[in-house]
Length: 326
Image 1 (cartoon, helix red, strand yellow):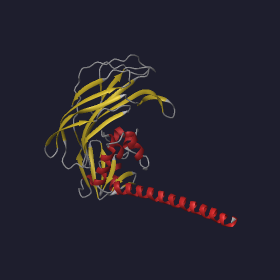
Image 2 (tube, helix red, strand yellow):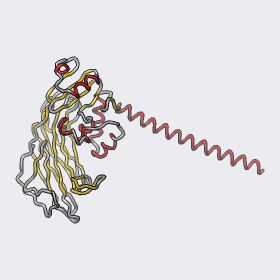
Image 3 (tube, rainbow, N blue to C red):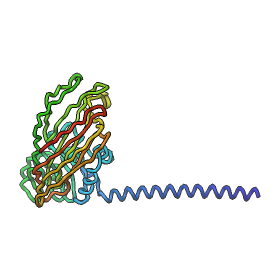
Image 4 (cartoon, rainbow, N blue to C red):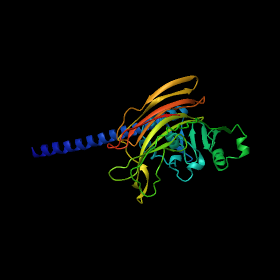
């Protein structure tokens, strides 16, 4: 009886171990299948220090997915790929090219290049170079010398064109803003501060901990051979310590409430009027809506863009509402 009992216990233990092993293998296989499906769905890899997509359709699909995410989530997804993006290149970024779309900026490498299908696209200044047959040797030569006339004049290898961007000039509303108190090094804005590319900085009243806070509104419209994009965004920042050495800088900070809505007219295989609305959102540092993206074909021209930006930087701050006509 004792021997039989021991056999039963031993058999049960072996069965439990086998079941655990099988479940573990099944889970691992499912994870591998999911990873394989994801890689197959996006067909994304890294070649010659740049992101490489199997096709234009794969690129369009990923861009559409990323436009639904916060930029922080986009960064998390791209962190596993071994390349240095244009968005994170703080040394050369302004010398390479002035890309406004925050997602596209993250997909380009630090030299302003990306590989899609059998083409390599290189953005330098206000020019875009399409390198045929994914010729990385030509890319390396052109990257080092964009004035290489032998390459630029050989249309069997390279096509050069001027990048077309929409002019989104912010029309001033003449509204004055005040700051309750100032920290050292922060310049007091007497009116709305205008930056390049449809960016406007609005300084909010400081509260409780006495740190400067601000909200940035932004709009862009740009066209490349591999993508056309236009959109709007609203982001919160605070002048505070952070980073490895704890230095003060403008860093992302939550907005208590945010929303952007409006309409635009666009010429793209015809003239269309569309509306957009991010909906009311709370406790996020970025509110963004990209309302035109994907493969180019014909240059999309933004004729008008009317956007209403709403936000409250903190619960005790008044709600700000700005209507912008671009």
